[in-house]
Length: 363
Image (cartoon, rainbow, N blue to C red):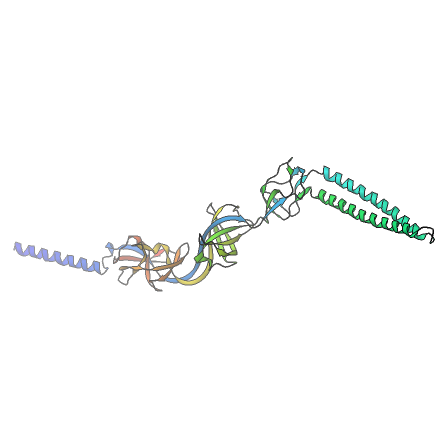
């Protein structure tokens, strides 16, 4: 009797074990399965972006110097960082020498004008006298004197105008509107012709001089939108302005110039990271958090009808902040694990919650 009872207990235990394993294999024991969130693979707009790095540079720099040399700086009206309008005063130079030169040449002009008046009067008088009283030679001499005096007067007037122009050049003004990037002159300094006094960023426009891989350069085009990330983590919008026609044979990099808006906070010399949007299209996408890396390859966990997951290798393309394009391995409508994938193994049973449109989980 005792033996029969023992055999019965063993039979019940075996049946119970079989039922447990059977239900687990068919997903009936949901208490042992991991709960995950899943979503269907759908098409959405994907933008291909070119990533690059570079430096912020001035759109156009203007070197401002004096056109006259040997004069002393008497006034400086601006400093680095100041915004100036076209024609605005930047600096003044001493006028002592230029004013003296103007006076000197003005006196020479006045003297020659008086001499010319006398010469013309003498020539006219000679012509009015009866023939034979004044010889033809004298008349010719007086006419020649008029012509030479006129020539001397023109030369003196040119020197006078040059002196006035030199005097005007003692006032240094902005050749264009913009921001003063640097000042290399001080009060009391004697300036030399052509030596830079100020450097001006025209219109205060800056851009990013980005270095792009040669494999990406062909996809870049003028007026494409770009996002620029500054050193402080801020982002700004820009537009591709110029694409370099050559590639550096040593670095295999090309240059793309990206124009920034006038109110940018980025300064010339800063480092910047750039993303250029070169193409938009509809493609299959999945959340980045759905991807798992196994054996150095990218996979997702696809959920079957029996709530068993299968590790599926996929090919990825362009990506955004939250989603990535799938170029192979999945079809539209496939259900994949979007949260909890990192803890799964191929063939695991799961409890599935479906992701709603706003990303929250619903049963």
